Image (cartoon, rainbow, N blue to C red; front, side, top):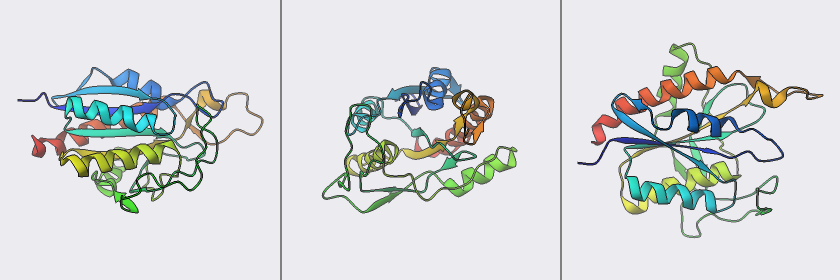
Length: 211
């Protein structure tokens, strides 16, 4: 029998930042146990195609029960579970390798969009019940975050793996806005830790039906 696992992914810093809170979250939670599920973390490069390929390779090896992908969305005021992944790469800024695709389909034969298999409305309600601010987002953007969200959804469909998959964006943390002339909205890192802990518990309980 396969070990029940939840894979969480985050990203390295990008866009001139020296910090990406999702990288730290992945490092903090990797190797922990959530409701009997081993948590395996992976930090992805902010690079066109390569981020998605790296995560899909891990999924093929580990066959997880759930995959929770995290990304940074600067300017948001709370965590936002994402509802849709769209079939386009249209980067507002270059990635960490200098790529900047504009209006490029992620899969020429793929659907226009995928819907998260994580119940984002139910999850958001569960977070709010714990006093953790959250709201559903209907746009994961068109950068590397959306690309990973779409690729994992497509991988799940093509290979017929019945794992739960969701993407959650997080805001900046305090350390990223210190000293900024015009600081953008930020949250405390502890709030993000509390959110991820709650998400993992929620997903682990839902994931039992897939074992």
